Amino acid sequence: MARLERSTGDLSAAVFETADEKGTRALGESFGRSVPRGTVVSLEGGLGAGKTCFVKGVARGLGIDAEVLSPTFILVEEYRGEIPFFHFDLYRLEKLEEVEKIGFYDAIDGRNIVMVEWGDRLPGGEDIFDVRVRIEITSGSQRKIEIEGPSGLLDRMWGTPVE
Image (cartoon, rainbow, N blue to C red):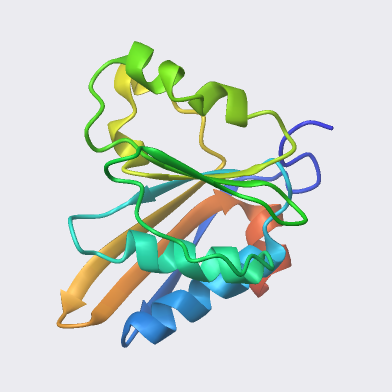
């Protein structure tokens, strides 16, 4: 089955605001309960924006009980659940060969959920992401989170998306 075959449509965006880490994790958990197998997600935002916090929620939504850690230094973490879940960090990688070497393209096989911190830094400028999650610090622990993807996917997750 092709990636996001059931969630086609024009791109749209849903915008959320969270008050703290708990809210960011809860939004991630809601995302994780709805995201279809095979989805490749780019997580974008500055240092400390809450990318890993969001991923912790996604893992919980996927039914994964393992402790989710930032893969900044190890570059990739794999978590086993009903749907295999890969968590990559591209912050320190500069060449496409480095991305290939850590198994990034192997993980994108239509069977897994792949979440990529610093996806906007993917060398070569390839646009292979199905969904983009942009997290912005608005003040203190508050975050603005924009999730952009195929309308069909966002409709299935949260109803009619906010544009």
